[in-house]
Image (cartoon, rainbow, N blue to C red; front, side):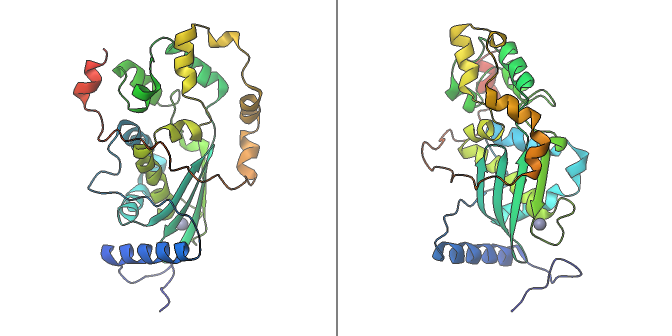
Amino acid sequence: MEWTDDFGFPPHVSSAERRQRALKATADLRRAGRELWPVSVEGREIATTFWGRAWCENLERYSDYANRLPRGRSYLRQGAVVDLQIARSEVRALVSGTHLYEVGIRIAPVKPEAWQAICETLAGEIGSVVELLQGRLSDRVMEHLCRQETGLFPAPREIRFSCSCPDAASMCKHVASALYGVGARFDEKPELLFRLRGVEEQELTARAASGIPLAAKAPPKGRALDAALVEELFGVALEPPPPAAPKARYRGGSRPGRKARRASGT
Ligand SMILES: [Zn+2]
């Protein structure tokens, strides 16, 4: 049976049916030899750790996205994101809907001067990458990293997306579900936030250990190039991302509570 397309009045698809379609798509793709990293969300919350939640909260800050995000949330909960891979400046996803759609999301890297400012402001305050990835540093540090415009999260003008569905002119539910899927993935692998934004989290702690001000060092050539070519980058097809290696999975469990974070600093 052919499903009707996304235009017009598609028949009501129950959540159970959508889940079935996604499972079938996953099984078919795997049978065809494709390696998949599906996003599964259990329970009400899309993300439960510090970075996963902070990513979702950032998306919800922007009125540009407000109308489209809720359907993406339901799609993700129904298991529609059958594959999601995060690489530098890029997210690729396969989302099961009426058909199986390919989603591409490009995110500009953090500008070198913004990263430099972050490193300088937080010099000496980040002693451990593990604590950073677990979101267990002081409120001051975590708030600074999450701050709108000057933190690690992208604004809508830094995000471009595409989808193979007929609704791709605006943010469709497939793109929205992939955007939320990124937050869910950060629950398991928060270091992917830094990969995605083109920065190295170790630089934050290296600065603390060496005491060398970042300004004394020339910015790495590659990153300066990125900043100059951000616009161009959005128009250029990248190589397919390397598969997210299933190693060293973050097992931090649930989001560190306020209490834990308060206990670790001011
Ligand atoms: Zn779409």
